[in-house]
Image (cartoon, rainbow, N blue to C red; front, side, top):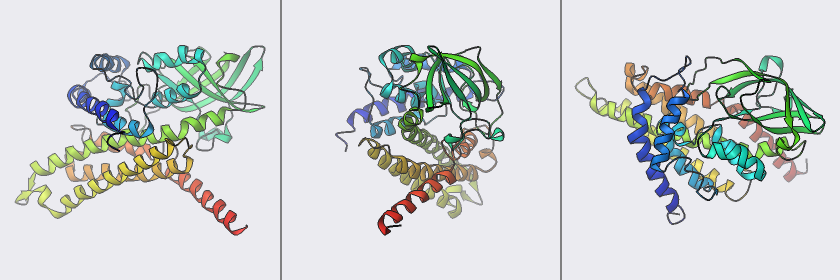
Length: 391
């Protein structure tokens, strides 16, 4: 495995050095919006330094090729050692998943116009799928999609409302999902566009993503027919291409953050004394840190296993569901223990530990809540049982 991973090990080492030496000092930079998310001028400043260091968009090779999923897992974990790391080196969501999708299925024209500025780190993107829950719109069940698209000459006209659209504010590239008579469709659009209006950006438990998670109104958006990805009705097929790798990429990045939180908690437990000895020498604290090591390793192995499945060409739907559940739940336990070990300091913003706790709590919902993945796996178990038993 080491021979096949040599390229990733080298890239990952450079990314880790850059994040630890250059990015981490930016964690106290005050350039944040009123939701606490990093402003774009902070992001672009870090990206210029990443470009100079040769670590910008490290998962995409100079010839336009892409690291394998197993290699990507290693590199993205290193980028996640700071909540700002993925922003700085351009491995963040939703851009990383959008780049993967466009690289796989985009036409030459779409790649030149929409993919290139993302790979070069000159633009951010947004993926418009989720819709307001109180209006019965699509969330974990994309078949509930209410946003419509209708062909009008050589343009499609799109209408609807979207919610929790990460990074919509400030994005330059948008991927919009809507339903036609033929089924789901996916469109590439330039942003901003007067037909896409940001209605509200809520305060959320997490704040690592520039632009937040906006609710938007799409009012008679006209998109040229050649900006549809594939054909009408193929939207869900393309979403599946993006879904499992992007789901796993979240696991990779937040694994890196929890590794760092564990390092901070470990340092605190060794320096802080109470009741006559270092905290780590108290069994309750030492055992929590030991359990962190176990969860970190199990999560890492789960990520690697799923990545290897995806590298066979499989969609890996069930495997990525299993990985997402196992990893997000393990990371939540790790983040919680880190806060607990650090006591009062753990709930302050003096370190990133409290932010990691908040971000990972949100991750248990984003890209499909744990319960939806378990339900999907249970349906698979039932199908397989019926097939084996003639049911």
